[in-house]
Length: 220
Image (cartoon, rainbow, N blue to C red; front, side):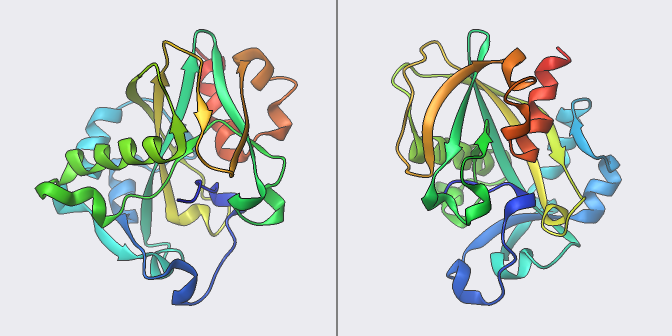
C-alpha cells in the first residue's frame, strides 16, 4: 500500500501502467462549485457539503490515469490527522513514498484514495467512504490504544495542475495512547510535536496540505 502523496508533489504520469488500472472515487468539479469553491481550508458547512459529496448519485469511480489528467473532476482523499493530548503525529516521507522531492518533508496527514474494494458487502455512499478511511489507517499504522475520529474540514488547493484534481476531507483522529507505530516504510520517523512547533520551527518542512491543516489548530 502506498502512502498518500500531497497534490503539489505528485508526479504527472502518463499511461495506464503507472496506476495498474486503479479505480478511484471522484466527484464533478461542478459539485464543489455548487457547494462553494474555496482555497485552503473550509471549516464551516461541512455536514451539508458531505451530504452532497458522499451521495452515491453525485460520485462514481474513474480510472485513476484518466482522473489525474481531468480537472473537471475531483478525487476524494481522506486526510487523517492524529492528535494525542496537545500534540499532533507527524512523519518524514521515506524513499518508498515517491519521488525525491518528497524526501525529508514532514506530513501530518495519513490517507489515500477511495477504491471499489471499499464498496464490499453492498456499502455505498458514507458507509463506503468510512470503510476506506478505516482501511487506510489499518494498512499504514498500528494503533494499539484505539481511537475516535471526526471530520473537521475540507481541503482544496487549485494552485497547481495536480491539486486541481484532488479534494481533501480532513479527519481529526484523537488517540488515548501515543504508542503509535508505522507499518509502511514511506511513513518514517513517527513523532508527536506541539501545535506551536508545527506552526513555528517545523512549519517550513511541512508539505503544503499539512501547512494548511495545522493552521486549523492555530486558529482554535
